[in-house]
Amino acid sequence: MTPVILALAAGAVVGLALGGLGGGGSVLAVPALTYLIGLPPADAITTSLIIVTLTSITALSGHAREGNVAWRTGLLFAAAGIVPAMFAGMAAGRLPQAGLTVAFAAVAGLAALRMLRPARTPAVGEVRPAKAGAAGAGLGAVTGLLGVGGGFLAVPALVRVLNLPMRRAVGTSLLVITVNSLAALGARAGTGTHLDWTVIAPFTAAAILGAWDGKRHARRLTGDALQRVFAYVLLAVAAFMLVDAFV
Image (cartoon, rainbow, N blue to C red; front, side):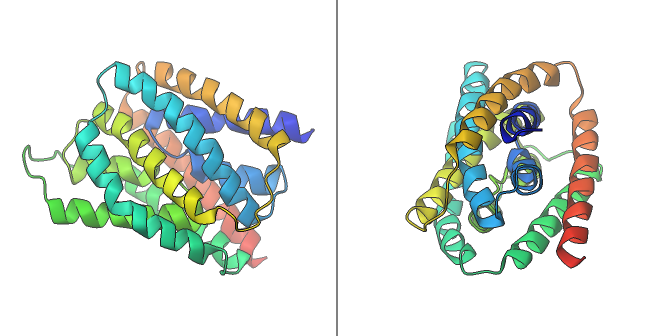
């Protein structure tokens, strides 16, 4: 299979995740770019940030039109992660590639296990600014270090820490992803990363179309069912990456 065909197929899956779940695109994009298309991990992380940023902006516009974005909450949450994302992005270039692979697999596995845990019903009005700031800062650091937008962690945080309804958390997470990814990209600018636009262009186009389709399918499935399916995919990706790192 040619890289363009692989990029189109992987992009569609990434878009479905972003559009339907409000996150998870980059957790799938980095392994796809690394193992299917053959990019070095450092190049795959930066490429993933570009793809996820453009796709998230497109998906965000659709959720915003339906009123599913808490703008003030999302911007405050994302603002706490901007500086950590930039510092982590600069540090990532100095870390060994095997270490990044293991760290990525660990984050993916923990996120999957968290998704499989039964969600607690949040108490209305119980927003803790300090806790929200800490969660936002942590997401920013993960974004900069591993090239993930943080949506797969942002959605649970927005629901459990900031008490947003699930659909509103999905839309708001896309805002968080966009801000964090832009900050991480800014930190990586001028680092000499090779960008292959013959991969980025078809991957992004398919991801944008997939995001619209994912949003449409999300209306017909329960949030719990979508999270379970995605959690099992994440666990499989994490296991594969760990095996690849140590074998």
